[in-house]
Length: 487
View 1 (cartoon, one colour):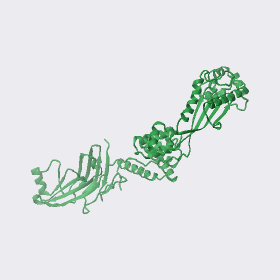
View 2 (view 1 turned 120 degrees about the horizontal axis):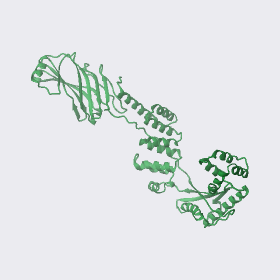
View 3 (view 1 turned 90 degrees about the vertical axis):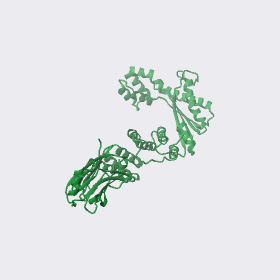
View 4 (view 1 turned 90 degrees about the horizontal axis):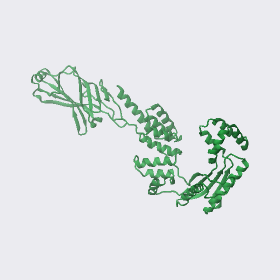
């Protein structure tokens, strides 16, 4: 059972309590400078409230026919809970109560001049979280007539659970004056051996040529986009004489450019082209990622860039004939490819309703700033609000601002591992440093959190002050629950 404790030392009835930033600290006040309460302690579990104290009547003088009733009371607004009473009686009144047994079962009877331990357990209710604990004192004379009635405030309870809830620092993405985008792909056009002319119906060519056409058509047919360039770069594989490979790479690239021009009425300057005689870089990427037994030696030869390509190929073939045959049959065909890139611009969007629809259908059309505009129109914390930032980071996975804002969403949902992944790409802006501090704090690493908050504050992040104060409050609260904290 988990207990929350409030402990008060009552020499002058100074109080110790788990404080809250917006809650009055627990206090205890004396009545007429002669309080009888010592060592007041209040604890709570999930279901019960425990109240204990010493009631010091050692200096109390009562006439034989007088008595005083003491009753602890919890109040908050219209809510009230009366704890069992203590009746301190003079000699005659004490004897009368004992003889007649006229007090309720939970009332404790004692004589003046004593010190008694008072301890009670009552059901805990939510309103008691910040209730006022008082001690009422009613004095009666003979005939049971009330002579006086007073109430002494002992303490304001404070059992509010402390939650670290910092303000997150989002960054507004910059407006893109020109929304330029690019789509890339590779086509593997089959050519007859040692030839450069394109045969559209030859082997895999219908499918490979259609890939290029589909890419261009999707962009060209969209009213919101405009193609600004189509780039084609052809590659040949490293086998055979370099001079012939240069002829093939150049001729086949020019053939593909001519084919594309025949399909579209592009301005001549819109299509750009280039060629690479032998794709040694592609060969290296394959070998490096493979589990070939002679990988290290093959890579050493590939990296001999100072050696003429023909000599390099001959050395590779001579040193590793078996591996070379494997590469020739299985890897070299993939090195004969035509890479294409279609660059285009997208119009800007200002209407929130239009942006809201696009983010569901074609989010790639939207800039980060446009997505942020949509987020600002939504209820913070809602599922749709969260989804906007997650779509943004999916569309712009390497962008620091997208990653920072997505990290803030994850931190707000206590998805700490997800937040850590985003923060790794969030850059070093003050807001990103601050977010890393929040992550450290939520993981209980307060030392790191304070250090990061200091860095963020020094760099101009204004949200750190409140986060630091909350963190200090969390520490004070944790300390107050672990033991006695005297003021």
